[in-house]
Image (cartoon, rainbow, N blue to C red):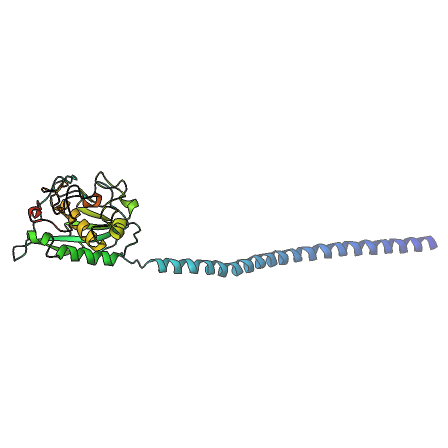
Length: 276
């Protein structure tokens, strides 16, 4: 009898233990299943929060870019007298399709007073030392002087477009190798309707003219000489007709007087003709 009672007690205790274990395990698994979705939701919420925090940073980066684009829209056009450098060889040919300095096109502008008008534009090429506005003023002064080419029935008018002739102040680098008529040491006239004045020569003259021409008269001479080439005096005058005479404007006085006796910055009466 006693053995049966003890057996029943042990069975009861064992059953209680197993029930407790089963219920505990079920409760643990249930809690675990319930906890898992909450963790995933929390992870999703965390990712969303990170994205929301990063988006304002992206907007801040884009805003300056939009402002920079808006700031770049306004463009300032260069002044009418400015130029960055020589136009490529072959683009500025004469109206008859040639680019030879031996071929000239007549200028058809004639004023009411019967004077032929030549429109010119003043440019600068490269990096020059001389004051460009001073250069423009002195070129205009030379071309309007009563001792100059105006004596041949010409009038020179500066314009910003529609010009017959470009008068250029150029650094030596832009002149060097520009075409067969120009070098970096002197001024020249190209076959592209361009009179090109060397910046250094404009400021200093040459060693050959230093004792016979002031800088201002050298400037008068070089402008009149190169414009003379453009008017049709292609070949240089090589000497004076009379030994010791006044040098013609088309003598290359920058390199010496030859047999002439004095420098001269203005065209002689015998030189007042034009093919233009």
